[in-house]
Length: 260
Ligand code: MF3
Ligand code: CO
Image (cartoon, rainbow, N blue to C red):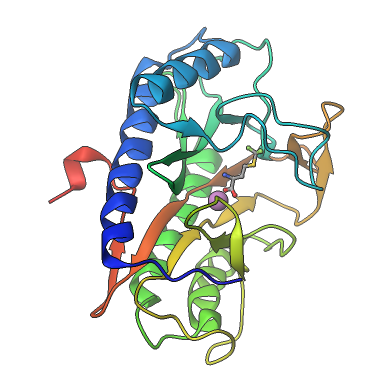
């Protein structure tokens, strides 16, 4: 089912979106060489509770994971790209970390992901991966709006990723979001212009381009959750929750310094 939110629900989505963005920024600022992934998970639980919000992850038990996720944030390092289950691992200089967070507040969910490099090292391939997902996300936001077809948004993402030289996986992509985290429609990271669902004001979408440097094949870690590149190559992921409005699109998960 595709959920269309009322103006007052969109107001609540703005609050949840800002909260998700602020928590991600705080996690990013606290993360340094030597930070343990389980520490990041603990900070996330504390920040969600302090805000009077609920985790979309901790009890989540979809078909693509083994049992409830049991944690508050996805921490995907290097070859891990999606659903990275926090584990006892300390981060090293130059590690590429993706934090993916979804929370529910006052009945409305928001979902966002950032990839960044830990410490001072700036390995060129990792920088290129991160920038490709950021450009693909910007292109998707640029393409979206009322009356636009979903295929136009998917196509915009796919063009940037493919144009940057990366294969595109179609098993996991973006999604509708609203009173729950995962809703219809599915938003593949590649598509055909002019095809698919026509976007309407009140629709909330989580747009989430992600890439693996040299493959489109995923393997599941022995933890039953973490998805890694089949080749061990590095990966990146950028995600925002956006609202389709009467005259365009509003990004709900912008970090504070970019909010108006
Ligand atoms: N937030 C992820 C997404 O972007 C889903 C994570 S599901 C979890 O769709 F259970 F692993 F947390
Ligand atoms: Co998502």
